[in-house]
Structures are given as structure tokens and as C-alpha cells.
Image (tube, rainbow, N blue to C red):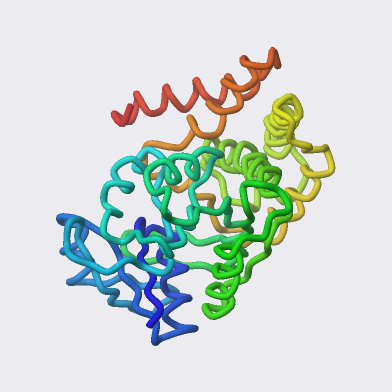
Length: 306
């Protein structure tokens, strides 16, 4: 029996967990959770698109067999704790698919679990929204993944391709995964940060105006920094990102906007913070992202989540 362990049952994690159960009901799906969260999931389950799912809940330290696939869908500031909680779920044939935003989580997972296969991966185009233990999405989007070495097609990559096909999860294998990862950063630095700053849904960015102009200004800095880092992002990538945004539900919100609306800590350090830090390293000015970084750090202080 194929087994999947998921840590981080937020909007994205719950959506993919539900998809796996619906497409391949024979799969053993385990959700890793602790304390009150684990108790609540056992008692109430989670509702995805009006259907209740009662996933098997496994607490950290509880005996379990290594999974075929581990999906990591926590926020980056919870990654260190998640890495510890995954012990017991990782074996030599385990694939760890990190769906975290940013460009560093795979490196941290490889250091912690060198025996597992960790591709570079991103999820693109999903518009899932979480409200408590209820999740709604209109588009599942796709998972793009590839080897850290461009052009290499390892056995682990082929096994992940087969698993996602079995689960009917749309996916694309990238021949240049580092560029793919930076393209997702390009998307997040623009739409996630500015939508969170304005507490606005996708619809505000689906036509021209000041919101889109601010988004593009932040993204132009990503392109400059990426090129300095040896990653070939180009202005046409911004046009493609605008196309992706235009395909999403106009009333749906990015994950970072959802965090801002709920006064939760955001991932600004993984977005603007990464751009500013690498810009400094290479002598690239990043004034838009510097302002966004300071704005959200101030919001964190205001919300009491600094």
C-alpha cells in the first residue's frame, strides 16, 4: 500500500490530502499534528469543498513506518519544528516534496534527511482558502518539480512523477528546477506581498492599476537579483505570472493575504527578505522590497507576532 505523510494541513496541505484520498482511496494518508491540533482533527476532521475528511492523525514520536511520499506544507517559520516531527516517517525510499514558499527549504530538508530524495518543487496556480477547519478551492493548480542539477532525471524524480499521476495531481517536470524555484519567488514577491499589504483578493490585480504596478515593481527587483545570482529570469516571466494571476478566482486570496487578514506572522523574510539580502550580497538596489520588508516587520510588531 502506498503511504503519504503530510505535515501542515492548511489550505494547500488539506487540498492535496483530499485530492489523494479522492483519486486513490486505497492510499494510506497520515497527517502529522500535535497537541490540541491533533485532538481537533480527530474530533472534527477537516472539510474540503464541502466534503468532510477524517484523516489518520499521527503525533510526533508516535511509531510509524517510513512513507513513500512526505508532503511538507508548513510555513517557513515552522520548518525547523516540522523537520523534527518528521522523524520516523523518512526512509531511504522516501520522497520529501516541500511546497514551502521561498528558495531555501529543500536545502534544510536535505541536511536533515540525506537518505531521502528531495526534489526542488513548487505549487503553482492553486487558489485554496482556509477558514478554520474548512478549505475551499476552485483550481488545484499544478506541482512543478525537478532535480537540483538541471537536466538530471533521477530514479526519485521518476517515482514522484508516477505517484502524482496515480493521485491525479497535475504536475510538470522541470528541466531547470533552480530557475523554476526563482520563478515562484518572483510570483510570491509580487502577488503575495502586495495582496497582503492591501489585504486584497486576486481580482484587484487582474487588470491594470496601482496594485499591479506595485507588484511589477517588486518583481523587477527579483529579476535583477536573480540574474546576479546566475539564474536566467527575464521580463517575460513577469508577463507569464500576470497570466497565472488572471486565471485564478477573483474573490480568492493569496496565503499571505489570508495571514495578514488574520494578523498572523507572514513569510516576508522568505520573500522581500531574501531579495534584499541577496541584493546586498551582489550590490543590487532593492528599494521596493526593502520597504515591503519593513512594512511587514512593523505589522508583525503591531499584531504581537514579531
